[in-house]
Amino acid sequence: MTQQNGFSFADLGPDQLLDALDSTGIRAESGLLALNSYENRVYQFTAEDGARYVTKFYRPQRWTDAQIAEEHQFTLALAEQEIPVAAPIILNGQTLHHFNGHRFALFPSLGGRQFEVDNFDQLEWVGRFLGRIHQVGKQQAFAHRPTMGLDEYLHQPRQVLENSTLIPDHLKHAFFSDLDLLIRELTQYWNTDWTSVRLHGDCHPGNILWRDGPLFVDLDDARNGPAVQDVWMLLNGERHDQLAQLDTILDAYNEFADFDPRQLKLIEPLRGLRMVHYMAWLARRWEDPAFPLAFPWFADAKYWEGQVLAFKEQLATLHEAPLQLTPQW
Image 1 (cartoon, helix red, strand yellow):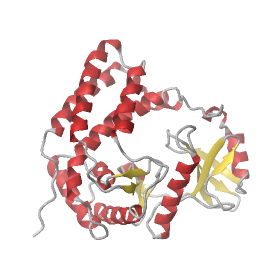
Image 2: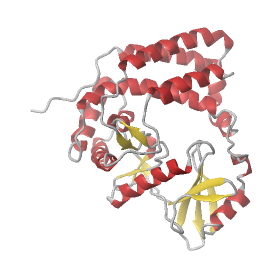
Image 3: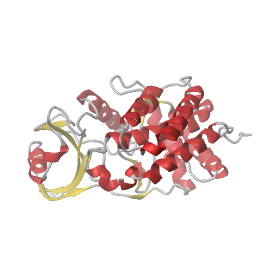
Image 4: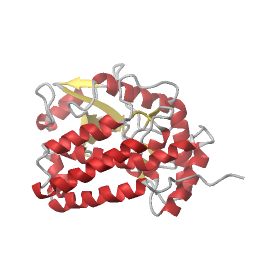
């Protein structure tokens, strides 16, 4: 559900948005252009002084105020170190604002072009900044935000999927049999023998813009976890492509922070965790009208048939040798 304490996104119309912005002293003159965000509601606008802003209204029940504050504090700490992140604006001494039951923040509108995942110069830049992000991230842990683990990414999602009405009856046996097998295998391959750092958490190419260098946006999924979580989603293509990308990223990363190569064996388990977590995320959000419109295939039997095959493929990948860095001579 999208509700918290009786409030939902349903009443978040233009008048409510404008009144909320007015409460911070920022008056929108034009815009309120909805940006591509499903978890929250995000809008771009131009204020009376000509400055362009982005405002994010946080999904009810997603995070507590303390957890959002930790994300903001981490992002501001990164910005203070001249790491290019989209940091919230401090207004009236705070970054998180409340209006009629909604919680929101404002950011400067920072444009950029798409990050090119096959551009090794850009990968090198990103690797350097990830090393710097994690140098800041390891200075202290999040106290209120979670640490990556099997309960959040496997066991809770398994329960959500079991209670979902979206999985076709004729596929349920095969789906849950293969899902449970994948969960058992992931549990065996998962370990916590890693130093936890504060992470971006969702560092996929869509959350990196390029403007004379990388700009990291949307730390909404920031949490404690292994450094490799912010690396593996940048890898794509065949195995030899991923090895070249990994060498480029981590050579640059190691200029600023020491990457533990033992974490490379977590890449495929992390991919499996994300696969299960993503399905449950869509199932949890299905009552939000934005989700059936954006993801109509999620209610199609062909999607669920494809997931049974995807489980089998991920199981096979788990049994392969993990990616390894090229030895340095």
